[in-house]
Length: 469
Image 1 (spheres, helix red, strand yellow):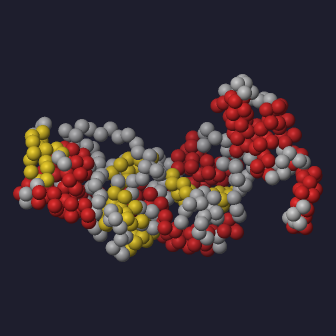
Image 2 (cartoon, rainbow, N blue to C red):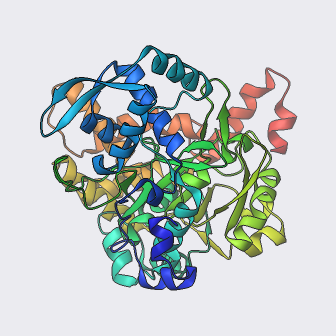
Image 3 (tube, one colour):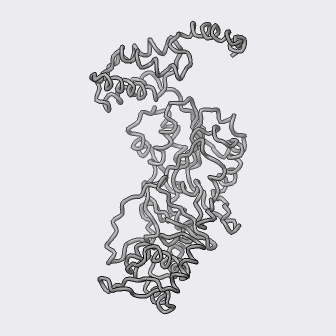
């Protein structure tokens, strides 16, 4: 049995007594406790020595992330089979190792079979236990947790009250509403409501296949107080401590991203996105604008959302059962009822509309951004902006507008070597370039814009279509 299996007397008990703050993968005391075969460890050692030419025992132990003491028997067995030999003495009763000619040929065959060189993998069963111990559903964020997570962004109390129970449930939610109101920002902050650190294996193994789980693109490694290599570490170094992940995917999402991807050249597999997001959040941004039909994606996840278990196929053709333990957030500018049927919407119980900011919040956004830009906030200038550039065009205010407009003013002032300040003249200048691209109407008021557009369209024989729109 592995270290984690020895710890666990039952899944529910383990989830009850362990949390992300107390779960630490224990350092194995022997090869048997790693859950790995001696042949797999031997292969990792020999492939590494093949790559570097010669390495000390401690260097090899650091590379494969196993204690030096557990590898002494492996080194001895490889020497007895004339695969490795001592090339020189190293410090602290250690030796440098190199491959014999026979060992080099064997290592090359191993490399052709599987090109993976790195940390020894963790058995899938140990990972399953760790996910249950660190699941976000074991936590129940309170109001003060949400207040802290959203402290430095503007959010209405009503919206926070809606988000709280949804986050607390861990059941997933739809965030929908007009673009530019901060749905992606809100979703990214939700992970911060839970405990911050978790442990994940760098690589998994099941049925002889290696699956890379740790991904620097989505996982932020935390600095751990590791002891010197001369001593034992206080945790299994095959695992890495990371912040709870927030995996964000948008229009590039395909069904292939949700399956284990196998590289036939290296014979190493890559974990799918939902596996990388376990114990964190998975945000599907701009849902409905992917290259796949929404129904295809939703049908793929109906069963996992219901049972909290997913089924994946590894390179050997074997189906494996893995945890589906993350908060899934769908962010969309479209109405959820237009994207999903009733059966799926029932499994995403929270649908929260992120509405346009109130005028008071619009002012607060400008005031907050002025502080960060080191610029004097002028309420009268914002009032004039709304009066001259929003109300005549029935232009809705968005939470992104204060940031975008102030950035354009800053760029304009920097270009002309002017002090950064809020003035009516600056806003009059930047809104022409900012809003024209968004509305397609230029600076014409609503009453005049449609006739002018119709007159221009008539030259192309599309006046009737424009009037119909």
